Image (cartoon, rainbow, N blue to C red; front, side, top):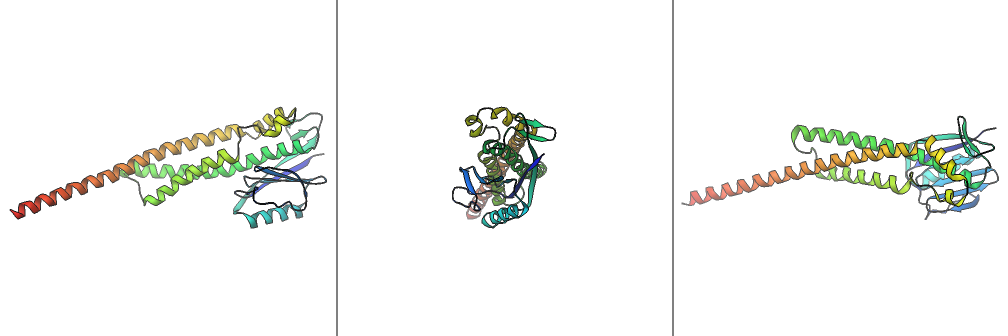
Length: 254
């Protein structure tokens, strides 16, 4: 019989270091990156990335946890959701119908939840990077057409900061390319971790994001050069005008 691991991202970030909520459940593991809670066969996992995972949790508990988290942190207007079928089998692995686990223990539940949470968080970043890429292409088209950046400098600085923040957030909060500590601490989970990563296409999606961010960075460099050239041109014309005015004054004075 299959059980379902539910994942939802109702907020962009959860400050687990400063927020101690346990929803009256047993605290199994608590780190800056995740918090694992359990009550019998019910599991709730909160991730720093803003993703919540539920296994064996009823609708009432899920609604309570989601509402509490959204009230505490910045909510996402249209939360992303994913789910994964989980069943007990002879060996750990990923099959056509979902994930097979030898035991429903905390290590395996946490590993599956982690990989699903990474997939969900990546989806949010994929949308953000697509928007950044579209903005970059529009700005580059304008630079190509006019030779200078449109709009005010403050807007461009905010865009630069947004791009940098997106890349930093992806690298620091998701750690897609790294095997979690639990893999090294629990013998036999490395293969399951790789299979989950492959099934959810985590590595290829992360590299695609990284390539798009590189393209955005190159575009930003072009725009910075164009902006600097535009300012230098204006300064050169100001100097020419000032010299001309000074020369005219000297001629009139004679």
